Image 1 (tube, rainbow, N blue to C red):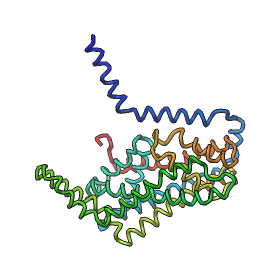
Image 2: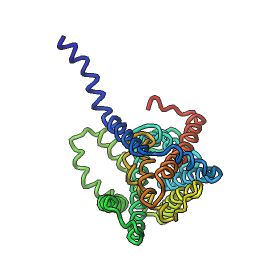
Image 3: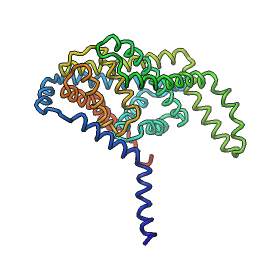
Image 4: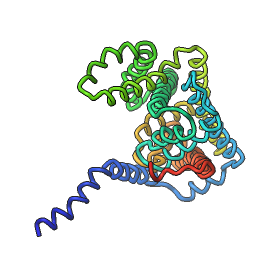
Length: 339
């Protein structure tokens, strides 16, 4: 009987250990949905929804899709001097975005690493390094955007909220590490690797050879930034991507009759990027609209209008990526089941 009880508890305990983040995410999302809907007037919600200009919503969708072309262009540049087909890079990038939207734990980045190797002669270590460089660059762009917001907010009646100031304080060391990592691996990665190679001596020669090849390929992704053409392409594309993201927020302000300036669009972008950096659930269900609601409510927007805006922004950002990514996945004949 005791053995049966242990046998029954084993799978349950394993599932809890494996899926604890999903359970935490469900709890957080449910809490955010409750807080967002608490005290909401249905009549006010209907009124806010009735003011929508759907042609402007469609234009915002176009901005989201334009951002994917820029991000794929930036990603492709990081493979220098190897040339990656742009069509493959864009399709796989969008598939990755789709997977990030529907699966937990940023599964789309893993999908990109595997799928690109199927259509291009590139190692997984090389692809992984380009994804890491992307995230480091985006972290720097987030810090720059936060700095602009931190300079603007004290000039408004709202001031700089304490929670945002603390988030910025936590962001600083991460950005310092990102910049240091980019510079270190781009300019001193190989000497540093030669210094640590002695740690591989206990391994067999085949394993040492594999590790050396993988590290050599991984460092190439960072070293591409040493070429000014690549650096210019990566940083200019990143700047345009963030401008498009802020413009998407601003365009949706106009679509829902919210008379808010461009600075608020950037402020909201910073809040969302910080708030959903560790997504609790696929698509940031619950958290995304709640962050929009509390941010816009601070600036005088009604909770109903802010909630409708947040839901519309979430659909505008995620739904096109899910649809286009699924079409690319099916059209490309790729299968993710084995992966």
